[in-house]
Image 1 (cartoon, rainbow, N blue to C red):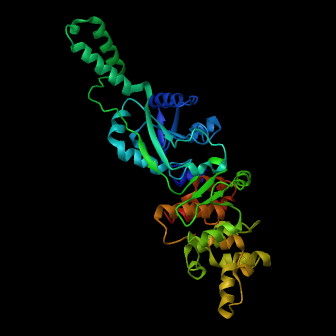
Image 2: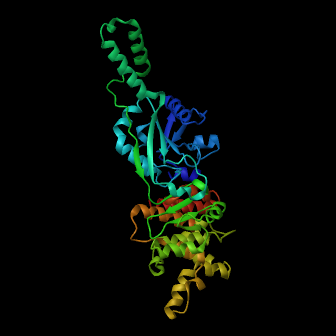
Length: 411
């Protein structure tokens, strides 16, 4: 990952945590029912997730009490508008933006000397079967302060009322209690520490639960897409829910998404785009081995690209150029079918969200598409960084250079 880090493409917006903030973070972990970290310094994202703590615990989802109970931690106002690098749901960043929009000033005040534990409560104690994900509707975002600072403030106010009553102003025990509380927590009288719960309404989304599930329920009919074959086979046994159920690898899925006007394609327009060039070059790179030139140069230089295209076997050549070959043949006769010439994986990669979709739905469908056919490295980086980083580690060093260059040229 060193090349990505040097290019500021690997978790570049994390917030460093050390000193007193580590203590507060650990108090949040304990309050949420997790074990403390032994690290003396680490970094966090917008929801409080830390890659270093995740590595220490051997669990990317260490802020979850089971699949239905994710949590977050706020220890700094700098978390506002920061990315969520390992989201459990595609709406996690939206939830955090709503939190800061609603309580931003209070968060700035509270995190001066405290921290906030977040419970994302969707009124589901636990999942029992895969289609339980359809129960997601309203997520109630609840807040808990470490050291029960909001309760301490109430206690201080009660002590002050008691102090002012009758002759209690001379009571040394009350003096002592007030001083101890003030020394430990500060003067909390004028601080607003009450964080009302925030309701977040979900629509279509992706969740890591059950090995990864897309829930598309804002279209003609609800569609549920599973990434895990085990849970897909379990889900199709269901007879209670009126939904379409697919595994992400099923070719029928793409056809259904087209039928529901969720995705579309235009091959003639597509071949004129930079996105098509990225897909074609990346596909070609997968078939190159023991080359005399760096893969980066082969993909960037039209002469070298053509030279190596003529060196690979005929089947590979046909696959890489299948879209263009189909369009050429279509000019002379309309008897050809796409499936006769165009590679199925490449054809799937030619799709995009339908232009009628709301922008937030387009983002979700892009994520689904780059997981169905992960051939556009730029869009994979934009819409599924976790999968991008996973695949990146398997690539040739020279291909990594081309990928980094491609991403940086489009940011």
